[in-house]
Length: 280
Ligand SMILES: NC(=O)c1ccc[n+]([C@@H]2O[C@H](COP(=O)([O-])OP(=O)(O)OC[C@H]3O[C@@H](n4cnc5c(N)ncnc54)[C@H](OP(=O)(O)O)[C@@H]3O)[C@@H](O)[C@H]2O)c1
Image 1 (cartoon, rainbow, N blue to C red):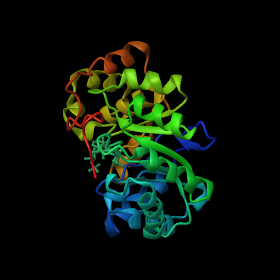
Image 2 (image 1 turned 30 degrees about the vertical axis):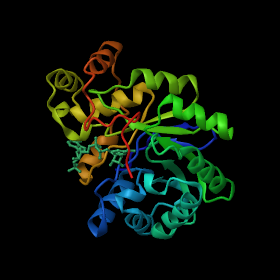
Image 3 (image 1 turned 45 degrees about the horizontal axis):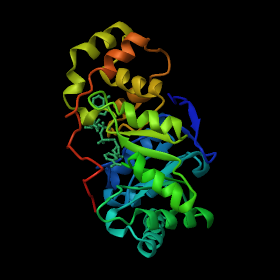
Image 4 (image 1 turned 120 degrees about the horizontal axis):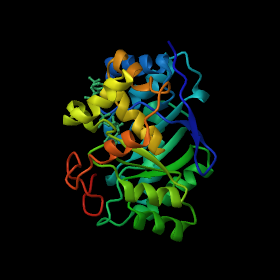
């Protein structure tokens, strides 16, 4: 059964579904089969990255699927090692060649890498690629407010979206508030906290029992009601369908607060702090 997923519109006019498919570790023939099965269930937003080494698999899924290209929102990301103007220009082209696509719908800078301090020139390359039609919408991942303020101050263009670690153990309340105030969409990576202990949490289980839903569905509904776009990864067609079957119930304020209250200072999965962490 094909699920219909609500959409939101970004600050540059691109509309995209509020849930997409994460694809970290989905590669090769098996990965392509998984991604096609997700599209058959109703997924239209697909997340990937140069560093996942699966842009080829993503392109193959697009070609295998019955879904017209223009209905899909395909995302990739610029890695830290190519984060200067010239290398970013070439990498965007290489990302397209790998996927054998004419354009990406969304292209993001993967990490700010503030010590390297080249994210502004990389951003300029994304701006130019958008102008020349290679990308429809440009954004960032793991950027702090100070990084995004600099992008806008130095280039006049703010990101449409910031993809950040967000799950019940790390609810990002302050960063999300800043996004709302600045009209930048929040996209949640590891929305299920990579299926860690959060999927055994007793309090969320009680809410799940009350609604006759799974813990994963409760968590993904929580993301939706927070206003965040989530991109749960699953290789399993059954879990993919489960993860987008969340639009026939709602959480009340008490339930929302209870889930948000599970956050803790050390709740990040791998303790990656964008102020100092660098990824290449
Ligand atoms: N921008 C960044 O820096 C960044 C960083 C990390 C991730 N990401 C993106 O975000 C995506 C999602 O994050 P993630 O892959 O780290 O973690 P996640 O989506 O929170 O969790 C994925 C794990 O949950 C399992 N799972 C999925 N649905 C389930 C369900 N209904 N019940 C039980 N288990 C379930 C999956 O197993 P099965 O596959 O077996 O179902 C997998 O082990 C990534 O794939 C990637 O696209 C971006």
